[in-house]
Image (cartoon, rainbow, N blue to C red; front, side):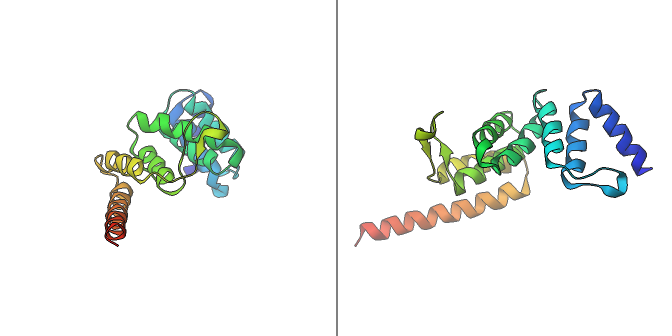
Length: 162
């Protein structure tokens, strides 16, 4: 029964259904040997790429996350996350917030303009957007980021009083 479901998803993915391409990509990324799906990161990226070209927000997010893990493709990964987040996809907003909080954001199109400085304010804005849609991880990340921001402000105030 499960193998028949995977076969139906694969058929729909081949026919160009973006939701099916995303579902099959998830199976392919992690592998589901018992269902006849071998793990393949490259195949998963290809499937997500097909769905992302159809303007599928989840695919753009998922492919963006995979590309962020590859130094040569980080700019493309960020671009996809920004597109998906701009559509209001909460997971992309949260993922982009985590990127801003921990790593930074390219300031421009060239590598010379890139900034590796974390941007807590940008992260908080993105977490708020995702949290307002009910995403629990974004709510947690927002709370942690707000605590970090308050601590930074206290440290700055204390340093100014020395």
